[in-house]
Structures are given as C-alpha cells and as structure tokens.
Length: 364
Image 1: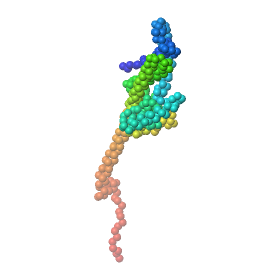
Image 2 (image 1 turned 180 degrees about the horizontal axis):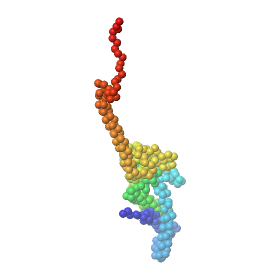
Image 3 (image 1 turned 135 degrees about the vertical axis):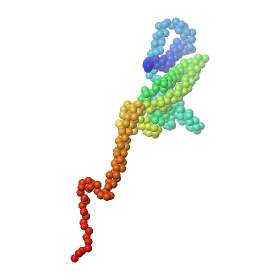
Image 4 (image 1 turned 60 degrees about the horizontal axis):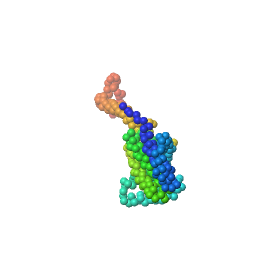
C-alpha cells in the first residue's frame, strides 16, 4: 500500500519556521521600541508592561494576523536575502565597492588552504576557479557546490537541478529539503537580528546600559551568520548527493543509456544540457538509444529482445555451413568410377568418341 503525503503540512512547517517566527521576533522588537518610547529617549519598560497587561484578546489576535500577513509579504524576499549573504552585491550601491575587497580576502584564504594542502576544505569551501570567487564565505561554499555537484557528469547543477530533483528518491529529497530549510531559517534569523542590531544601536546608543541589548543581538547576528555558513556547507553536500545518486535516472528518462566510460558520460551530459537549454538538435544517440521517455526497464527489455534475431541468424548460418560441408564430403565418393571409364557414358549406352587412328609406316 502506497501512502500519499500531502505537501501542505511540509509547506506550512516551512512557512512557520522560515517566515512566521523570525517575523514575530522582528515585530516584537518594533513594538518594544514604539511602546517604550526608545526612539525618543530612554525606554520605559513599565509603560510597555502596563500596555501588555491591558491588551485584549482581540488586540492580540489582530497583532497575530498582522504578523502572519507581514511574514507572507516578506517570504518572497527570502531568495534575495540569501543572495545578499552569498555576496551578489553588484546591484547594491552601498556594497558594490566592498565586493572587490571581499573577493580579495577570499582569494588569499583560498591560497592559504592550497599552501597548507587542506584539499578537503578547499573542495567544499571554494569553487574550482578563482574567477568564480565571491566576497563571502557563504557564497563561496554555495558556488563550490554548484560548480562541483554535476561536474563529473557534464551537468551544471544550477541549470539541471529543476529537472533532476523530481526524480530523486523520497529519502534523498527529504535530506535535501531539510538542509535547504535549515539554510533559509539561519539566513532569515541572520537578517532579522542584523536589522534589530542596527536599529538598536541607532536608538539606544545614548541610553547607558540599554546599549547592551543591541550589542547582544549583534553577537547573535554573528552566530547566525556562522550557522548559515554551516548549513550552506550541508546544503552543498545534499546537492552533490542528488547528482551522485540520480544522474543516471535523468539520462534514462531522456532516452539514453548511461555510458560506462566517465569521459563519455561527461560528454553526453554536456550534450544533453545544451539540447535541453534550447539546442537545435539532440546529441548523437549512442549505442542503445531507445527514443524519448525510455527508462532503465525499457533498456533491459530492448537488450533481451535484441538477443532473439541474433541467435536466429547464428542458427541459420550454422545450418548453411553444415550443409555446404556435407555436400563437399559427398562429391569425391560420387566421382570415383571416372578412373576406369565415365559412369555417365555407361549409363547412357554410348562410348566416348574415338580419337584419330595411329599412323603406321607408309607401304608402297
């Protein structure tokens, strides 16, 4: 019996963890600043507590609804937030000039790992080429996974993931989704805590001990950034896992047989990707091509059916060879009487034509 799992629980869980809870934290901070008068002077905690004590159920419900609505409004910006943490700053004027400084720092750290021969760290933290370096550690870890995940199979991970992910097994898909959710949660908290720290420093800088509050959130922001880096490394492992275990499924679904030679496999992967991205002609089909939508089961069936005509042709060839050899063996036995006379002539009752008579000596 196959159990069908609805995607709604997973979607609601992801929304709650990635959007709703961080938004509640942000709204709570805004409410504290507004209710305590921190924007105009020293915070009045007693006033905030008095306001909370007089809050009605309707007011709390409305606040919750507004928080969920704000979380829904901010959810589409999650991708943009991750991109900022990765270091795609070309379109952000305030960070554009810092991009080159960050890339130079990344290049020197990469060279340091190379000199120390820390190959494993180098492979998961930095892309193969220095031209692909980004200004943040999160961006370099993500780009390293994107460049190396499908490299052995001639596939670009960014371009081919949408086609490969639907073919992933439930276990592999669950691992990948869990790591993606962890990455988004850590990135969201990093962004929210960063905003709280900046606004707190601006509003509480002259309020004595209250300055410890934004300093504490700044420490939490740094810890969230480190957590985001760790989850980015784990996300990269999940991405490589999908390509390592399911690249053959994509090739089979497209109708090709997976070559045993790694070089041919990479060439086929590159050709398939170019074709799927808008190439005019599909790649030259290798031996065993079965047409579109052929699966591994179809390949096995085609191989089994191909044995039938081959075996039949071999049997016919063997029969012809045996008949020819039998006829050759029988030919000398039938022609043996030719030494004494022609058997054909004896059977017909005629004698062979006489040759010219020998000439004797002339007589007078």
